[in-house]
Image (cartoon, rainbow, N blue to C red; front, side):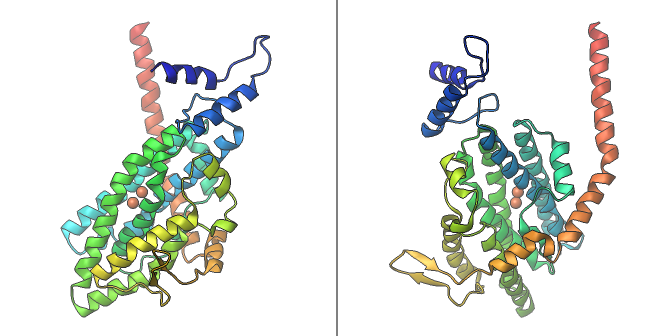
Length: 336
Ligand SMILES: [Fe+2]
Ligand SMILES: [Fe+2]
């Protein structure tokens, strides 16, 4: 496409006629025009440093959440109640590892290495979603996570398929398809429990009671307290505000809870005819900040397990690097 080629030239770093410093103003204008026209920014395009830093922070945090998120559910793989349930859960947990891989790769296109990002996670300099610091106490938690946590993730991530940064947007398209399978398997699991014995129904209800509020916190702090929101919206990294997405999620969940025969643990939840949305009760933001600060029920356990998995996987990384080096060497020898 001729226009795309021309735009690429204007947005790719270049030097001015005297061979001096890059013409940042022209690049900034080309970048702004691309954002305004809803075009994608690609890895080789010029971009403001703050845009790059914001994306690295967000994509890294997202990647970390995918791989830490494997832990609470992996806890139940050996105790799944049937072969069918076990196969589903294993596929789901493996998908989450794959999501981590797509996202670390997307982050690498911005000029950081995966090692650097993992190092930041392990040393606590980068975060992951606080939802994964809650424990999975019963089998029903696997259902509640699929329905609510993956459901909230989809609500957050579908708009990210239109994010202005190309590699992140494209990774999201595939991730969202897999997330919708995760959400469905959770819903179906809860439905089976809800229609089962009174004990099974109670177990499903208890899991929903514990996961509902933390799921609402997954959308992040209220809009007026969200420090990065406005800039991310202007850059079209984000398309909707935290509160808007949270409301959308509540509106989706209420009828689904009714079909499941389960109740959501919020006495203030009711349809507001005027707003055309469900009203819901206040969120305990103190709890949210406490968990973010490291004081959630499982923060230490999750990080210890992550560091252990990384150390125990060192031989795999070394073997892969040695194999790649040998392969390159053999190829060069054949050529030479
Ligand atoms: Fe995922
Ligand atoms: Fe998922």
